[in-house]
Length: 367
Image (cartoon, rainbow, N blue to C red; front, side, top):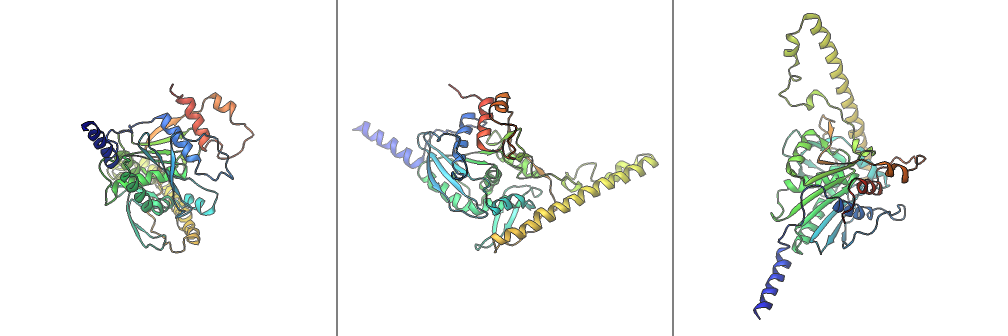
């Protein structure tokens, strides 16, 4: 009788309190990453996209969200055996609004509010540093899904899950950065016993250097990973335009006159002239980028989101990578056996399968 009571008590605690032993560990786990690629691949339109990877063993698709924002969607996958819940964020689709989300790269402050639908202005915070700025298109995509994601986390938590992975590939990877930051700074914090690990796969740059610093700090110790195939061009964009405004104030560049003052007369005149030309050229480039990839593209977004109100974009375009880097370097087998030189697709090195293949070469499966 006592044995039955003890077993019942243990079962009850597992169901109501979740798994007591933490499953997730910090740092890159190749087998873990490859499994999430299999999940992510299944979010694509199978009628237009051939699945190359097998079904993720022991995982079940629990939930598919409605489409929100600019054709954004996420899924919930669980592995009951491991007590693991995966929030998988879909990447770019073939629809125009999805591509507009990528191209609307004018930057927003890391703390503020934005209106893009009938719910009115939505407040957000994704970094502590007031000099941290983020991509406006992906912020809209993330915020459009965030309320539902929070509900799903609470639902899975009540079912006993304590270990959560945020995973996204391509556009989904960029949104994964912002979602992790949003959850960290949310005014109603998640339960303390929740463990969150984030994989941003094939992700473009989500914000500026100060956002990258903040993200690196809140995920320090290997909890926020950025996986990059060195042949993939997507992680190299958006382009970065760095001006004097983007540099920390305590630097020789903020008071350049003092530097020039100690120089000889003709050296000072020549260098000041060159310096002003260089500074002016970057400022002009920044203004053009904000005008075309901020103000202009947002007008097109309003065709899909008529109630969206154009935000005041910050005067910066200094994009930077974020997260702990995991670099995949394709080996000769990757180059020889899979990619034909005649294949001119711009995404030949970007999709899930080439990332999976490069990962297999760099991190072979464990026995």
